[in-house]
Length: 158
Image (cartoon, rainbow, N blue to C red; front, side):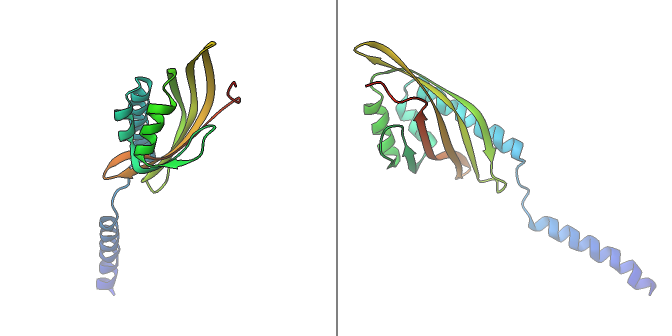
């Protein structure tokens, strides 16, 4: 009986040790949020600088984009075309993150916020305010945007 009482704590300790080794430590959600936020700031900086070639590197190759007042499209090349042709009269852009929410799994997060665009028109500059929602996913240890949806707060001027 004495031997059994001595063995039980060792068995419990062994099970606990083996159980802990089987699980990979998951990054804390706060760390994920900080990592995604840092990536987001660099991506927005590229957009604010109208550096479209750099901006598209923050998106997955099969990204889904749902732009305001336009049909949905898919892929980096389509996004580059939107940047190069759809925003030719844009003179200013700002994006401000409201929140980044990591998934408990640690491999996805979503971000939402507000944006401001200024477009040059024949009647002068037109300012537009809106919001966005995007989904980040981890691909080869790098956070990339898998989906982006954005819309205007008011309809565009005709």
